[in-house]
Image (cartoon, rainbow, N blue to C red; front, top):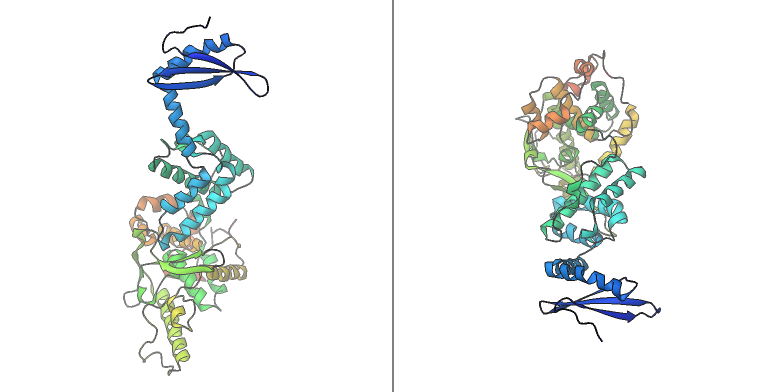
Amino acid sequence: MRERRSKGFGSIRARRRRDGTIAYMLKVTFGGRDYVRTVAAKSKKEAGAMLPAFVAEIQSGETERKKQDAERLSKQPTLAEWSGEFLASHVKQDADRAATRAAYASMIRLYILPALGAYKLSEIEAPMIRDAMQALRRKGRALRTIKLAYAVMHRCFDAAVEDGLLNQNPMQKFSKLHLGENEGEAESAKRHALTAAQVTALLSACADDPKLHLFVSIGASTGLRPGEISGLRRQDVDLKASVIHVRGSAKRVHGGPGEGARVWIGDTKTKSSRRDVGIGPALTALFVAHFERMEAMQRELRGLPGNVATARPVVPAEACVFCADPATAEGLRAPRSPHTIRAQFKRALARAGLPDNVSPHWLRHTAISHAIANGTPLADAAKRAGHKNPAITAAIYTHAVGDGEKKAAAIGDSLLTSGKSAEIEQNGMDKGLK
């Protein structure tokens, strides 16, 4: 006689699989719905022992929650699929952020997707991310690279939480990645600050290239970012007031497949980066000479008399100080590619006998570090650097120049004046970059 069970308790059914083994199915009706589960049991009696727990799970709502979670997981994108949506919807699409989007895409493609791209978002847990980051370190990736990849991934998961795909960011559970010691910003600034003697050597190496000489002079004297220097227009330099108005920054980003790199002048890095920076007589004189050369070249190209001093200026106010091509109106208003400037800078380093890892951005570290070392108030140094908060300037640049260098360094114009540079004290100055 068939065994009768109490209402709502459920039933057990045996089913023979194709391979000849027996599978047991538990069936429970609750709330007008049938719930079925196949269990691994050796006998019907053993399967029956599992039935009460199945009933309790259904009555508590746990089975329904698991079902909803499974449905949500089936509809959830993988990290590879979500990363495309993240770049399209959560990273600003304006032209000024094109380089940021390209950097994010590169980080995701090279360092994140190979290890985690195939997993659904909710399947990715903190230990998996930690293991992926540590694997990058074992492969010899730089700590800075891993730090950037980590930051991009964190933002990617934050966006998934914003869109309701995740309840929380799994990366919030991290305490430390245990990747080793990373160089702090202050240590980096100290290592990247050139001495006065090195600035003098670099300027001497640029003597045959007036444009590059001016570029280096602006960076070493004012602390402008390389992009801000490249983005200067004629109207941004007020020679009478001896002030540079920083209003934009040159940007370069690669286009799509088959397209060349695009260079344009966009917004500054931050709102506080829009600032007025004072310049001294030596740098002012270099600007005067540069603008006179620009005028003379334009008059020659247009077949006009070469009297630059008294004739009406022909160089437009919106012309770039470092233009892409002075022979055309469009080229005169377009900035020179940062890639071209870096290549010229590298050749000057070789002539100056400086290490080839020095970059144009080191000029910014040099100017701000020497200014603070020689008594410039922190608030003024922060304003000159374009930092909104002086604490940022203090964290990066305070103590970036040692006592020996303080005796030898000269801020601003003194770094640019060849006559003074020969008189700079060398006692206690570092002999060179390590």
